[in-house]
Image 1 (cartoon, rainbow, N blue to C red):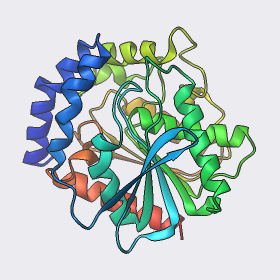
Image 2 (cartoon, one colour):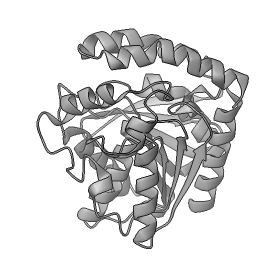
Image 3 (cartoon, helix red, strand yellow):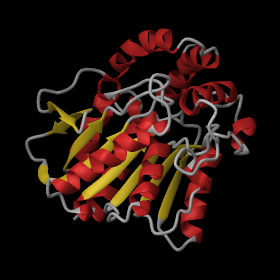
Length: 299
């Protein structure tokens, strides 16, 4: 673990972790987190961002000059289903566009508590349908996401299968929150070590999103879904995250069905450390590996 990563974890533990653990007012949390994108630095001039509304869902295209216009990474941001958007994930988005050579479509899906489950999964599937309808070949599309967006990406793959649509070429899941019941062993085992999330925070965000619905509903918690027949996926997670078990169980269950799920467990890395690529070397290395995976599977 680099000194920079250690410092970022130290800061997160004393700021963001406390905010999440005491989450009550979602609006207040959104306001306090609004400036977090500044941690990533300015977006380079070489990056072009273009807003587009897709079937009522606000989205944002992220492209560079050498981007292959026929290849798309549909990206679902994290934020516990209650916050986040293209602005919070723009730095990660352009870095993924650069390393993969693909256009990135950031999907600003509806958030809870204003829009409960299954609003987010409906928006994600709608955008994927739109891409297919616009003529993008399924094998030229990748789906990605981090945290809640990582779980949503996995659930979207399941929903794509449910509707008989072709699977995308591959998927990338960064620290996926894939079990809203919080039953993974790491939720308690890594409670102190996790620099950002707490069991209480996960429970509160799940309550906002599900509003009393089954926490083990397959499209909310894809660890309980039938994970056969899904696109190949690469999963990144930190060894000290409380979501470690979510990531490992997704990989194990996909592999058990004969599918392809690579998982890389990064020692002591904080939750979605790739978002700090401008500040921690591990973030840059992880994004480079994601780029290799995307280029290999989306040819």
